Image 1 (cartoon, rainbow, N blue to C red):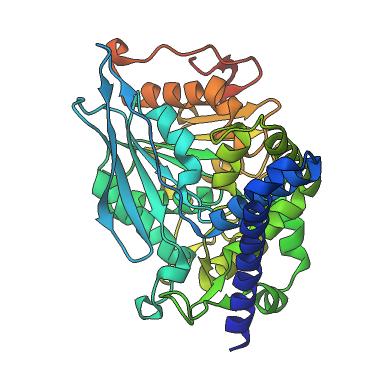
Image 2: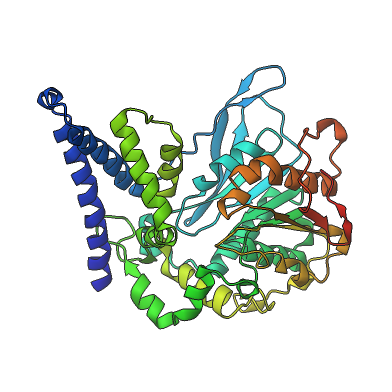
Amino acid sequence: MKGIVSYDAMETIRNTNEWLGATARALASYPAFALIPHPGIKLMSAWGRVTERSFSRMVIKPDWEIPPIAGEEGQDHIVHAEPVVRRAFGDLVHFRVARRETSPRKVLLVAPMSGHYATLLRSTVTSLLPDCDVYVTDWHNARHIPVSEGKFDIEDYTGYLVDFIRHLGPDTNVIAVCQPAPLALAATAILAEEDPRSQPRTLTLIGGPVDPDAAATEVTDFGNRMTMGELEHLAIQSVGFKYRGAGRMVYPGLAQLSSFIAMNSETHSRAFIDKIFNEARGTASEGDRHNRFYDEYLAVMDMTAEFYLSTVDRIFKKLEIAQNRFSVNGKPVDIGKITDVAIMTVEGTKDDISAPGQCVAALDLCTGVPAEKKHQHLEPGAGHYGIFAGKSWRLNIRSVVLDFIDEHMAVPDSIRPKRRRARSGGAVDVGDKDRKMGV
């Protein structure tokens, strides 16, 4: 009951702030105030609009809103997001491009379950669609999942990935972003041992904590400071009576959002202050950069308690993936069983969530993979978001990843897209340090 009270109290605070924003907006928009040329009225209205929008977005799952893909003959091809495998805790979604032949590059984007929806990868999906047939793991908000559906921890997550990859077939190219990188590696190892014909063709791991101890960050320091008992007591709550998942133990998305904002509080504070003044001056717009970013950033989802706690305990504290000691349903998962899958890691030099060294550790774990099938890329000046959805991804990393896929899929030159040359000091073939990866 204590957890439910805490959960509902947090929702009440959010709802109250949304109401305060709406009230300020309505009061300051009263027509009579137009006769009072005082900047405080405009600031009050601007504060209300920004506050109402910000707090209302926290309980709304964003739509994919993928723009049409331009065809070679100038025709726009509409994109439809269609679930092809439905499961209790997450779906496999296919982005079908209408009236276009299926691309030979079949890509599965493994979205993180770390407080945000899979739509955080919207720009990543949009950038890949012109050249790829794209699928994504669309994880569900735990507060909407009834307790009767049972638990969902990192072993269940890994099982979902195994099923999704098996469903898509052996020509799949898996790209795991951030949190799921170690579990995607484990899922690939399971398929390599149990069903080799269903292995993906390539596996790209982007900014993931394969070995959290390789480079310390605030995230790893927090995980090492807290005992599991303290973490469960402080972070885990019960879903309130308002939702279908009432009574389910979760790590609330609002709590995760608070920690995200606290890590860069000055940056976020300045962004909101600037937005309020821009609204007051009339220079802001519905689709400006602030709204595009924060509409997604503020939309958070709850994680099941068992998933959150098992991630901290087994990935960060016990280093089960880093030390190749991970098991699923009591059966050991040997990453060394991977032999036929080409593997690439991508890191950013300014990543403060999964620092350089944490992800590239996957290459050393894959002892059965030939050196010529191991690649690594370190992007200069890129932060965590930038390596999969920001400027660094658009201008450079996307090209590197697509070239890596093409190299190991033997894609005909006639359908290879034209791409930019990578900056020096980036991708390297582990088997030949002096040769830059084909870009």
